Length: 77
Image (cartoon, rainbow, N blue to C red; front, top):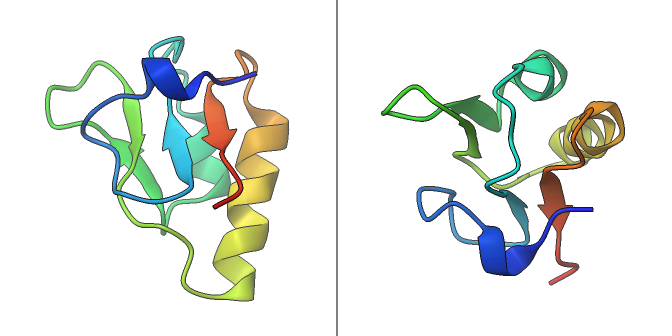
């Protein structure tokens, strides 16, 4: 389970985030390419855009479910 206190600072503000347990496997990018991308420094993934519609929210949920390290958080805001 992702830990908000370990949230990468380069995530977009909002309820979804990726924390520092990210193994940079890129599974989440495959699941939610409209919301998750490689960080600028190239060593982890970030939520660059929060969901703006139901389809993106579903993609982010799928990314959370697919993440092998449990690094994607949803703090429920």
